[in-house]
Image 1 (cartoon, rainbow, N blue to C red):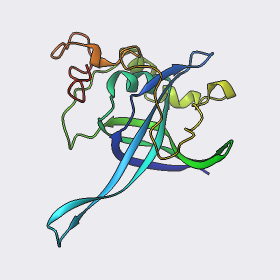
Image 2: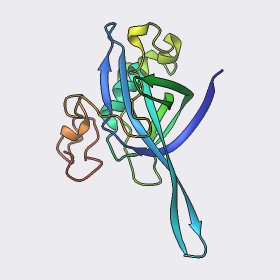
Image 3: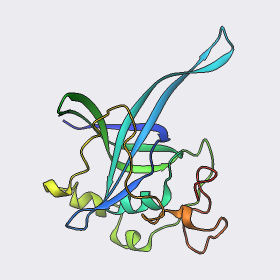
Image 4: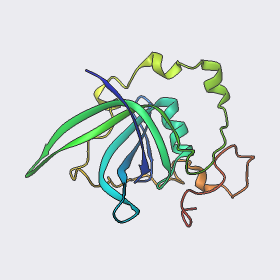
Length: 186
């Protein structure tokens, strides 16, 4: 059974771009979603519990996500939810994963500029959907972290993955994001 969800949250790790042996792009990051409520007695907003999700995107969406997103960005993720139990040596846990069908910045907190990908435009809106998710075992997303509830570490820095943070602020010629999400990350 497949459950489609939309989650609004904050990227908690540097998005990591990897490629399978078949050259299928996979972008993975951890997403934190904290419920907030207004406490009338104190007259202020208070944070509730934080839920962590592992977000996986594939193919063109993965390539675009790695170039557009950074740790600390507020985003909206839509996709298929899968809850997976894991066990390693003396530890076990549960990981909530979202196979993203769509990703984007949460415009409630800032602005962004969309740069269409001419190759994706030619392929049509359902090019990634037609081929479906990665099918073989070596084309699956990485296994969940052994420490559920804690962001996974990322092996590929954003600059190596082609993240836009490597571009000079104001440089729109590159067709990428023009400023880092967090001061000091460029």
